[in-house]
Image (tube, rainbow, N blue to C red; front, side, top):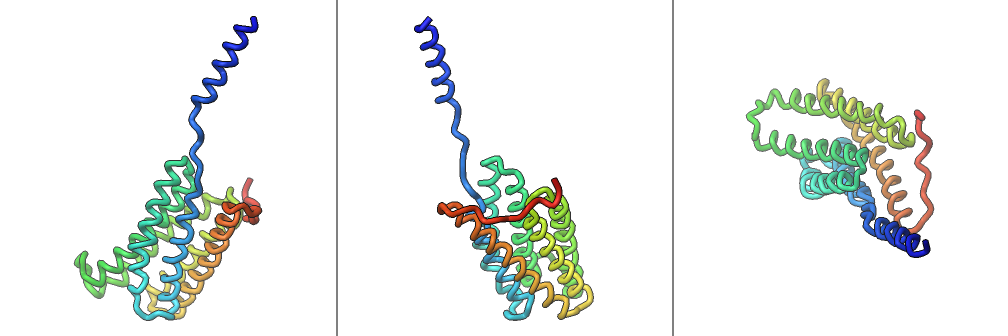
Length: 210
């Protein structure tokens, strides 16, 4: 009987040892600071602090878009599906802005100058729809997440108004909402890295929906 029990225990231990260890990691430690860098660039240009509209494109192409693509793949590989969709959306947002800016500057798409504003409005409206959906669909997460996306929604609405009406005030206001988005991302990055280095988890709030 003892031999049988030993064999059974040995089998259980062997099965436990054979079970793969769950992959661990925090893709936000890569994605958040690169999101931050790109957003700062957009905030500076939209508020008029930096006058060159294409000034943030080098950051967006070489750092933010590439980093968010890697972050999306990393999150998906870990099975972090919500993180993957969020980072994937922002990869598309930043990457498509860089392509839009370069394309309009170098006439890659054959868009007439008089249609440039409509093209930008189409881009803003498309992303307003996508991030608006993201805002609603993340209401089960801590409230800081949908609040972050709501800030982006407001910024996009203001920038869309500025594009369609030529209102510099609306565009500048949109730029300041981009800086509010930056503040949220700074907090998320601090919270993630603080906990990763052994600190206590910083509060992110309660879910708005249970």
